[in-house]
View 1 (cartoon, rainbow, N blue to C red):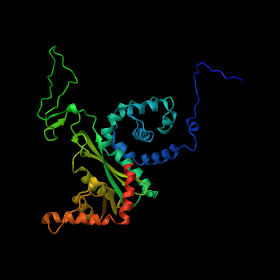
View 2: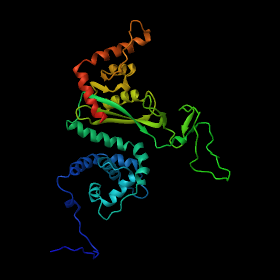
View 3: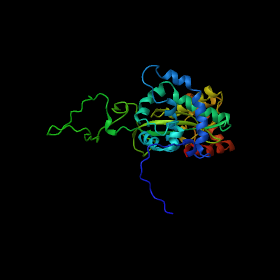
View 4: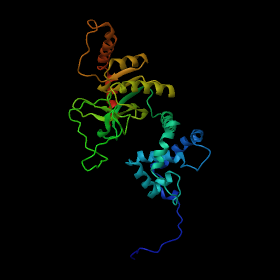
Length: 338
């Protein structure tokens, strides 16, 4: 018999959300582990919020919503809020009732400084990493470091001289003052020392390599283990020539201080071919497995005395390139690139 649509509006519904989620759904196991980690952070949440005023959106819900954003590749927080409003699976994961109103996207924007100040996201990340270490998913010995350029949302028009007045009085003959005036940079020399972005002062003019355009950017860095390619440390720095080397050392030290384990080997690409980082790694008993440029190291016997330690370190690195351990480390490094 043909079924027909029922246009009669029902006043009441009975919905068992738990029965709507299939028993083998991957989010079930994730939710169990995440709720366990968040339950250990209750004291941290209590210290981050005042005891007075209106109740906020639960911080556990905000963290889990950001996790959903990453797992399902949601492009923006506004789209995430829309998805939570209409998706029963998302509501189940966030412990929301079907009739409960979804929070606005600006809630995440307003709470992000609070989470950063009290280290909430960092603590949650460390809790997830601890689960991976206890589950035997992380290597204890072999790690890889890499960095990437994060383009700033600031326009190049905002990159103006530091001593320039904030009042842009440019207007046409009719007295009209445009919000987005035309800017002609031809013939002007711009650098981070003399110019600064008005909309993102922390962004720096940075070029990834020869022949690449200079862009207002930040640098992101990650430290991964080689067994499964899991990220064990992450940080963001300003874009400059020394940031990658300094971040690699800092992340290795931070991982050791938190988990009591120091990398045995540390792989990296040619961007880290610098004698200073190799020396600092060896001082920490970490064997560098860094891809080198085609340029051969100089002769330490004929070089200046202050340059000899760096040259000798690069020569040791060149000898390591012929070992099996180096080739395995470089193959594992591809997981980071992917």
